[in-house]
Length: 121
Length: 110
Image (tube, rainbow over all chains, first blue to last red; front, side):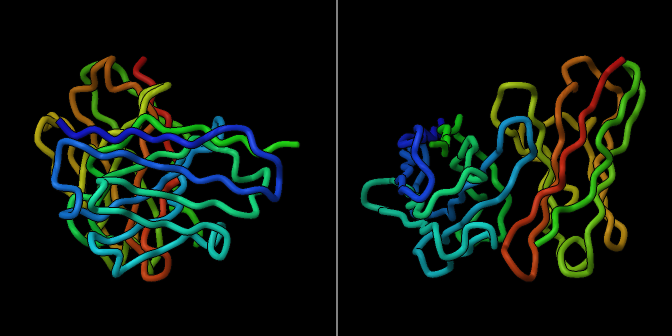
């Protein structure tokens, strides 16, 4: 059974940093691209960032480019999102999502339950 | 990257069919057969319902179908059931940032 478990969320002040993690199990992690998708309270889904199976292709939404960094450790079956210079508008539930293939263009076939990030002073 | 355009809400009675549209541009929906649809009941994580315009993952009922014409993709749910009530999101691969979502559509089963 595919499982994706996010962690690392919490309350953080504007301008500070936070690192999210996603522990994956139930599939061969390095056979698939992975993504982060967020959802602000009461709002829709927003794709944040994605990384191919071997980290060779990486993409970011314009809203986080230059502030967020996605990475993965295939030996640890883990996905990460380093978030710097956080803003109030980054407040959201952050989902880890598995892609259906090795590259970024495959749909997101499994999702975690999310970790909540709140940016506030 | 602008979000794809979906109607805010649609509704239908049990047994009826409803269609949710998703309008993009020639840089996303119009150029790629990488349109997917997600179902999100309240308080839960999204679930993939359709990928690559019209393909259903294993376990998704065949009442759910997808199509595309030009810059607009559509999700049709036939034989509506109470359990179909949820928010639905479309998503497309794009020529700029890899993925963009629609604003979401709330489906109400009357």
